[in-house]
Image 1 (cartoon, rainbow, N blue to C red):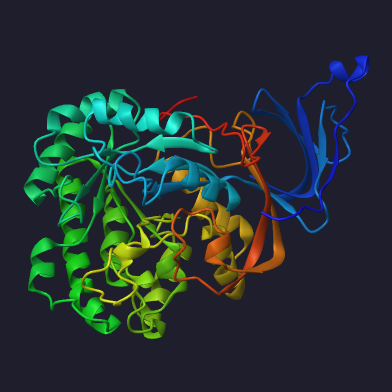
Image 2 (tube, rainbow, N blue to C red):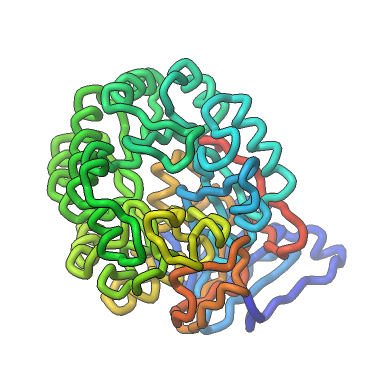
Length: 463
């Protein structure tokens, strides 16, 4: 994260200081709270925010940190769409590398997807294996999603009771054989099941039949790949999710929305009272199909990066509140699986690794559009935490975990994949100049030092 210009005073442990009111006090002119960006002092005890006072109140802490004039204290980001892949495909990504990347990007909580690990998180035994893999390696806090696949309906309640935030399903081939997709009727049956314990169904919404009838993606031309994943496939699947959620009363969440065509029906469904939330991702908001070179398989993801006009409408959907949040869909693989040598979009793994870069990517674009940092943080911290049921995350507020990033919004940096913490050095953002640098990250009041993992495993609804 680079050197910091913070001034920091670690108060000597005199008798007077031993009786300090707080373990840590952070002071600054720009601290993002529910009241906006204000001058405040934050008092932290046992990893929790227990005081928020106007600057000048001189809260007493065993340790004091003062922000420099160019820094903003922001709530740690909550990224609810991360594929860590451990155990089973740890060469793609693992908990150590992923959570270091998260911390370096100001993300203090991730929620791990039920694939592409082996076994996938479709029963409690698999969840426990994943938790065992994460427990000693996590540099930030880690929660988990469960998976909904054919035949595991009886496992859903047990996974819910074990603390998963909800269940992910696909409406087409997931890309890995061990996580088969649900037919719409099967999804509806599982929705009916999870209504009984008020869980949520997350859906990769692309229609398998529409994809089957689309042109083949084979070759190095991006426009052929784009035609192979048409907006229509996404639109049909989103409509399916809306209606099944309407009929069952289930909470449903549309993953990684890329088709702006779906926004009117999403808006209509929300207005009708359908329990629907929607996410999109930095790659859909910052990259353009028209600018992707042929053979540049680092850009391949599903659903795909679309055209400039589509991107503008996604931003408007966010500003209008139709899209609820921005998360990474960090879906890495080994470089050979991206077929870099041949550049064949039909063969390459579909996924963008961006966990460390999300805040800078969105802040760079948001500034150009006159969007405030507080709004970006609502999309990337507060709303994802609410959707995933993480009650103590997502905002600098009394009682919340002391999860912070020291962010210098006017700084900039050049993306160098060899300096990122992601396990495999490939990114569509290589060589881009981005605005905003994270200088330090704190999880539960403890600074991430990238040497000692101190993240915790968390459950939905945990207080």
